[in-house]
Figure: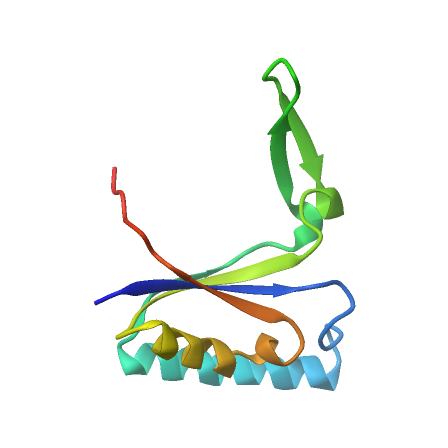
Length: 119
């Protein structure tokens, strides 16, 4: 069965403010979503990522030496969670993506897995 990665993204200032009642409601909604996805048997794995302000990215200079970017220079969007689902097709993956709380104010990217390497 095909596998898809669901990538949760948002830009700073979108969505509920941490500590607000709306944020508490969203955390409850995430709990319900996670339980539903897990109970369905479609979830392979998921993980949450640290805040984007702690992110780093590397490019290289003209001599091939690493150049480190951090915070908003590393990524303008906050990527905060990844889900790997195993479902019948892209449409089924999109259905899960649309049910994620961030779909209302951010974006959930749906990507087919081309291959898996284990090592």
